[in-house]
Length: 109
Image (cartoon, rainbow, N blue to C red; front, top):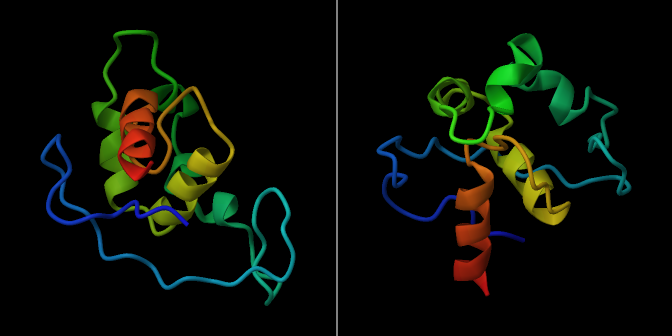
């Protein structure tokens, strides 16, 4: 389990949201479906309702728009955990860029 929320604001000044309650998985599958058969966290993600290009900017491009969406997303924690567990190397996941996720992983080791 990753300690992804830590304490205090993010380095870019965006405060951490209150973490969502943990949902135990009935079985491990991509897309994480909870044991009540509810929609997967990916279907509830705000990024699924916005322009996907904002979450995969060109090298050196702005991540501000994507991070702004992530701040108010109810599945931000699940998204970041997924990215860390699956070693996602591109895009904004859970409000963090690839560089920020690598830094988080190094601190966890």
